[in-house]
Length: 439
Ligand code: GLC
Image 1 (cartoon, rainbow, N blue to C red):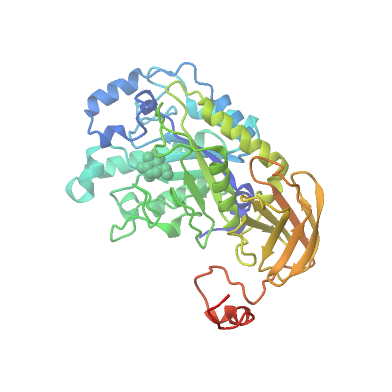
Image 2 (image 1 turned 60 degrees about the horizontal axis):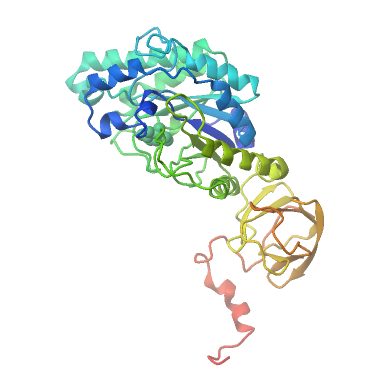
């Protein structure tokens, strides 16, 4: 069960950085080549052991996260290939025992704390090297038990060696169920070690073996054990805290030199959309084989960070607000108590912005981007703001802050979702023109 005090910082944060990095970065075809390309697992392991990202400095990751305006970061301590980025005592398939001779998790945790960021660790339960993962406890009871104990032991290690960990992000539970993973026992142990930790929902499919509804590959249910939901490549509100994880490129999470990056406004739009629906964005960064931040990512991150520097109050600590303003024709809406933020994706051509559906009185309207006041008047459909500069004051999204006289309420005609609800609410509006077919 989600404890509201424990998750308060998470909802306030709204924006996190995901980092997918491991020996697969050297292959440059994403994080899943081992299985998707059916590579020889011995060859893969040998290459992984030789991988030596000597120029990697996790302080670069922490800096780019802070400059982007992220409040937390989640690093793949172990991905599906099983390679560990920390000094695990339970295996030598680690960056500490192999070529790098470094504990990247330790360096990362320190770098994040130095930048004032919260610390998250991603851990794939599935380790594609291990036959028992596929054979399962029925066919291979001893193998499965040994592997499960190994995973529990590693999680315990991660939660005992690096001080407070804020987020633990499971993944890759497929094809085993939460019960097979001993997920309940594992979570109890985790909470004993780190009472404030937030745990995601991917702890293995619930009995019946269904995949999670979020489309996450290798994800899986066990929803009741986690603190927050993790819709993947999608922004889908849940009735508990949630975080949409998204690539900043087109498809892959791990480094691929010729992957295409999405433009900054598309990334920012995802962040604003998450906030307007009451959730977080966990935006992915794939450092290159040497652990360096690709310039295309750094530029976009800095652009978003600069925007947040001016407009951050419209994102951090806001709550969902799609219920009292129709925003499709201009952008997104967020809210903090009686303050409402209009995030303008489509700048109006006539200096006037309509705020349809809003019934509550607007006391003041301010264009946050420039600090100037706007005029607010009622019209039949809601409110209309005037006095906007002729040209958009930023190439990203201008934001208007409305101070309302009370909690926002909506006019009768407006219901979230234009094609749902009672059509009679549009009747008197249509009747004003009359029933004829002519102009
Ligand atoms: C999927 C993928 C994995 C990625 C994750 C991020 O589950 O299997 O490669 O790390 O999504 O959400």
